[in-house]
Image 1 (cartoon, rainbow, N blue to C red):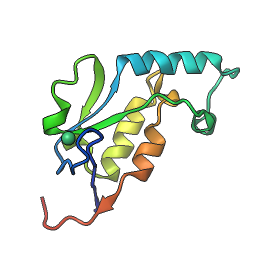
Image 2: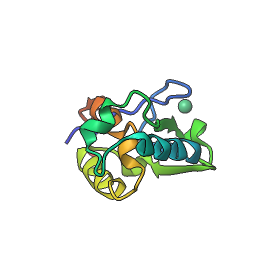
Image 3: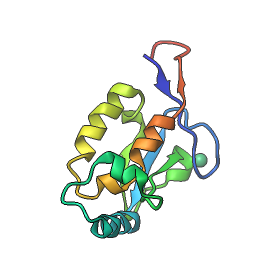
Image 4: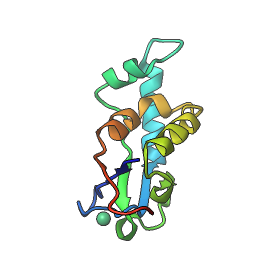
Length: 119
Ligand SMILES: [Zn+2]
């Protein structure tokens, strides 16, 4: 299976599979506000994608990520391939604010690479 080749949003280096993907609680609050502005009883992913102002997840390498204080975060070691993404998406979909974040675009655009060796 291909691995996801995350790039750090802060230093723009490769994460080498270590680090964190996080979303600040400020962004989560903003996401909730976005959802409130939508006149829909049930928001679809397409509705959320159409929103230009989605709450943003941040990818960071181990050095840049620090302790992710004030943020909901996922260890990148647990987000290495598409099977991990499916599992985390299922988990995150239960969050009320999830649909107003850029998760779908982020994971869809993350570059995939063939592993050099079995890890
Ligand atoms: Zn970095």
